Each structure stands twice: as C-alpha cells, then as structure tokens.
Image 1 (tube, rainbow, N blue to C red):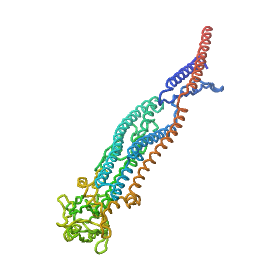
Image 2: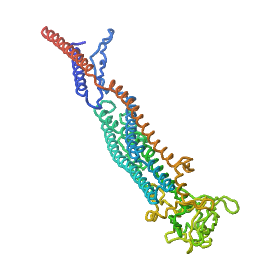
Image 3: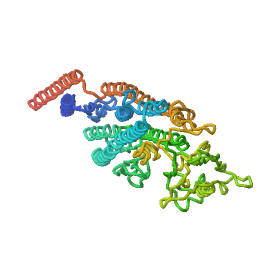
Image 4: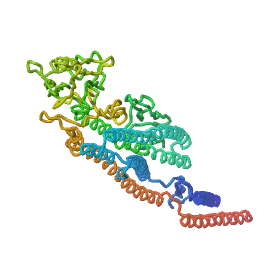
Length: 578
C-alpha cells in the first residue's frame, strides 16, 4: 500500500462527497416541483488490493448510480386511482347537468305537465273546461316534451364535443411518451439514470390517466408500453394512436373511441372520457329513450280513446295521419317486411272494431263489426302473416259498409267518408288499428321530438271527441272521462306502470346514478389522497433528511481532504529524506 494509493482513496471520497452534496442540493431545489422523484446516491466500496498473506485492503469508494426513489407498483395504483376519480368527477358533472335539465319537483317538470293535461280532461268531463283549453293543454304538454328533449340533447352534445378534444389531447401525450421512450433508451444504455426524463414521462402518464384508463408495462430497457382500455397503443417508439369517430343512427351522431390504425372500437371506462361515455350511454341515452317512449305511449293511449270518441257535431269524414307506401298497403300490418308499420313504437293487435253510421235526419245508427286478423296464423293454422290483415284489407272492409267510402290519399293516408246525410264514428276498437293509422287521432308524432296535437284540431277545437258510445248510448263526456282515467291506468308497454310512474322511475334512476357518482367521487378521492401520501413518503423530498445528508457529505469531504493532506505531508517528508 503506497501513499499514492492513500491519496487516490481520498480523492474517491472527495468525488463521492461532492456528488452527494450535488444530489442533496438538487433534491432540496426540487422539493416543491410537481412530479419530481427524490434521487438517491448509491455508493459501494471499490474492490480491494491484495496484500498476499495479509489479505486485501480497500481502494476507496465508487458511485454505483443515482436512482429515483420510486415504487412502480405504487405508481401504477396511483394512476389507476386518478383515472377512477376523473371518471367519477366527469360522470357526476354530466349527470348533475342532466338532473338540472329535468327540473323534477320544481313544478315546471314533465310530471306536473302530465298531471295538468289529465286534469284538463277531467274538468272538461265535468263541464268546467272548454274544448279549447283541453287542446291547448295537450299542445303545451307536447311542446314541453319537445323542449325537454332538446335540453337533454344539449347535455349530450356537450359531452360529444368534449370527447373529441380530450382524445386529441390524449394523442399528443401518447406521441410525447413514444418520443421520451426513445430518448430514455438511448440515454441510459442499460443503466436507469435518465431521472429527469423518467420524471417527465411519468408526469405525462399521470395526465393521460386522467383522460383515459391507462396501464403501463415497463420493458427491460426502460421504455413504457402504454395500454388504454386493455389495448396496447404505445409500443416502444411507436404510437398506434386514438381516434374519436362519429357514427350516425339516422337522427344524431355518436362519438366512438377507436384505435387509430384499424378503427377498432375501444371500451374506455376510466378517466374523463370513460366518465363522459358512461353518463352519455346510461344516464342520457336512457333518459332520451324513456322520454320518447313516454311520448309515444301517451299519444297511442290517448289516440286509442279519441279515435273511438264522438265530437259534437259528429264527423262526416276523417283522414288518418300515417302515410303508407303503395307497396306496404298490401302487406300484413304485423309483418316485419312492412316498413310503414315496422318502425312504429306501437302496433295493432288481433281484434276488431265497430263502425257506426248515424242517419242525421232520423237519428238511427247502424253498427258494423270489422275484424282485424293479426294472429300470426295462416288459414291452415301454420305460423305466418300471409293471411293477416293489411291496410288494403281494412280499407276494403270499410268500403264494404253501406253509406261509407274508404280510400288512400295521394300520400298514402287512409281517408274515411260517410255518404251525404250520415255521420261516422267508431267504437270498441280492441285492435288499436285506428290509433296506429291515426284515424280521428288527438296527437300526431311518435317521439318527444315530433309529438303535437293534430293540426286541424288545433285550428278547430270543436272536433275534440269528448263523447263516446257506451252500450249503444252516446255519453257526452265518455271519452273525456276515459282519457282522464289514463293517469291511473297501468300500461302493458311499461310492465303495468302508469305514464307518470314510468317517467318517475326514470327520474329516480337519474337521481340515484347522480348520488352514486357523488359517493364514488368521494371514495376514489380518499383512495387517491392515501396513495399520494404514500408516494410522497417514498418519492417526496424531506428537507430535514436532505439537510442531514448534507452534513454527512460535508464531514465525508472534510475527512477525505484530511487523508489527502496527511498523505501529501508524508510524501513531502519522504522526499526530503532522499
């Protein structure tokens, strides 16, 4: 062992102490830097020099590496919790906007409008309201449903516009991660020491996880493979990309998140995008569907009663609202091949109806039953609709009634006219075919978007059919009482629920979903805070700890410098003796 070796040992100590001071200084400087991970200097003894039979002696200290103090497993859980919290927050915001649009229990809501509509019929039955008030209340209800639908669609459109922008931002982050992968792999060359680049990449992944559900798989060379919704998007330096394409269902556009390379749809459930998609597909779409179903069943049930009602004065002619193409007129009304009927939210059933012709001069009434065969059986008893009633069959049957003519207008609507001196009415329609065809209907339209009181009824409220033929006797308020009774009637289309009850269930479901999103946001926030605290304990900078490290490195430096000084003095002494 020479004095030169002692000086080299001292020099290694100086280098290690200098590096330690620099690492601690860098940690202290970045103590408040977001995303910074504390760096730790690792030292190891240099391999010793053999002294023969005396063993070996060390040759100083070496710097092993400067590594970030990070737990990959903890960081992965933190990214997952951030994704879940962002999803819950986005879902809560969207559902809160939806809930505000419905305005339930405010007095200015659909339940109140439905109740007011049925109340107007009840008051008309008791001669407390005029026909005009009933018609106006019916149109007010229709317009309210249209406005409500537009309000809900606006919430949906806001979500659609957000998704496109978020996917663009996510793509930018994916590109940055791919670029950093290349830089890190090139810089480290097998040694994980590109700490600043790794911190930068982790910060980008953190932001990405708040947009979409993100999973990271780290490769041996330090590169990240990024998976979104279980699909790999970044593989090394290659980014396959995300795409938010638009699909149309004929009435509105729907954003679909897909893989950029082959347009494969991705089931994104986390992050802001996942929360927006969930609130759109569950809360908003279900509300739109329920609103349209409510409008359709309201129109159908009211029309079934109104079509068999009797106005004062009586009808001499009426024209249906449903346009039937020439081809569809000869196809059974229950056939899936009949495009004019297949797209309706309701359908006629096997049954029949009575046509009543009143001679105006004598007051005598002739009633003729017309069967509507929609039993899905042929004349031989086999399953099929070949022998079931078509619109043309119904027209021909109506025209076969004395003093009655039924024709199709140029636009395919069924027109029924009594001969001069006669009035026509209908009763006991167990098939619902009149309501389906819109004969003597109260409402037109099949969704909340287009429901409206029949246009000629809006112009002339005297055509309102408040009367009804019951047991061969005309009851002046029969239809008005029957429509008022719909408020409490359970409907097969709603599994026995009333119109108000079915809509109330949807409103309650929105409230429950909103409350659940709020609870989920709170719980995921607690989990995230806990994980962030754990990460701060491991990767965060402690000023006190770094200050102690500085003192230790200072002492190490002073001690190493003293070793060199002593070795130099001994060397000077040796040189003077020569």
